[in-house]
Length: 152
Image (cartoon, rainbow, N blue to C red):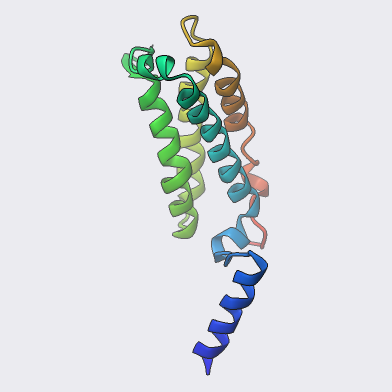
C-alpha cells in the first residue's frame, strides 16, 4: 500500500511540475536558495564564454597569483562550481557539527579567489560584470545564525 501511495504522490508532483524537497532543503532553505542562485551566476559566466569563443580559448592564460599559488580562471570557476553543485549540498545532506563551519570556510576562500579574479586588469570585458556579480553573491551568503528552518 505504501508503494501505491508513493507512486500517486510522485505522479501528483510530476503533473504539477514539482520535485521532492529533501529534508536538508526543508531545514536549510536559505542556504539551498543561495546555492542555486550561485549556480545561476556560474551559468551566466559559462554563457559569456560560450558566446565569445576567442575569450574562452584564452581563459587558461588568465591567472592570478595569491597566497603563493598561480591559479587560472578556469580552475577557480571549476572549484566554485564543485562547491556549489557537490560539496555544499553534500555537507547539508550529511549534516554534522562541523558542516556549517566547513561550508562557510570554503565559501570564504572562494570569495577571495573570485574577488581577486574580478579585480584583474587583463580580464575580458565580457567577464567583468558576471565575475563581480558572482563575487557579490558569494559575499551575500545567509548568516550562519539564521540558516535553519527548525530549531537545533
